[in-house]
Image (cartoon, rainbow, N blue to C red; front, side):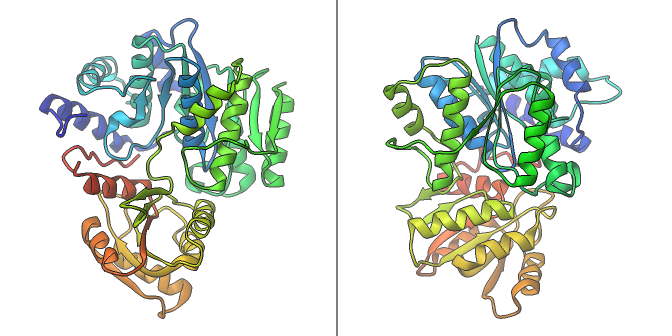
Length: 414
């Protein structure tokens, strides 16, 4: 990847990111219209569709890696990105390039420039990815839902396999206030007769998934054991379960597993900001942004660094369950460093300080910083390891600074 963004690419991305002003609009109409205008998907293209609250990105990258190990030039569509938009759209060989983004965005501008209901950022990103996968002759594509499932733009495709990862409370404003409501939205990706893979979940969630699969005649497989005897490329016991979901989906798609495919496919996985170890384990970067993910992060931390506390750099968007995430992380917190980051929905540091004081009282040591670099520098000054958590948007900005890729960083609100 180049060290800076070319002016034409910047103009294209500025237009694309400008569509975030249209917000998040759940629905399939615009996505269908975009696919029709682009004559997509091509005949014979096959999809594995992944929804869930936590772990869906990890399952997607495990699946993509298994497909690559099997010799497939598979496409991969995920969100959000951490540093650059091109992370969202890739195949077995590479990510979408700057010139390809420019030409794709120009085509989309011509298609929808005068539409009464303008497509959202996510709908356009999905269309851009689908067009690129077609041009790259990807026979298989792994698609991660953006939000929910039933009304997510990705749900216009007809998959060969559906995967539903761990479901918990998140995005309640859009998906519903209860686990049952959220599970119903996620279960919306289940298609008649199409195999569904999940793992044992909360009984309320399982009731929804089981009933939906039965109603639609979709064979439901529930994973009960993780893979054994293989090195996996991501840290934490929970990633073994994500790997298990990927293996089951890979088999359900008709692929035969071999020791070589499993060994290479599970090990050769790169998925930053998921308990990512940096600077010889001095800094750990994780995008945990809801209570369940934070609890998983704490378990992984305690397994990796028994008895150690962390100097936590924390930033989050205002719509999240800040109190719940803080409660989950507090058992490993030596002190907190609160920071804002480049996102219009980022909570301000003083708001985060007030929130934690409201949860634990004034005795918790915490500091506020106006930017990510300052927060990291202050956290590094202590003796403890540094844990960066609270938002993938924060993780992306932090990673860009640590890698010296600030000129590539393109912050996103979605």
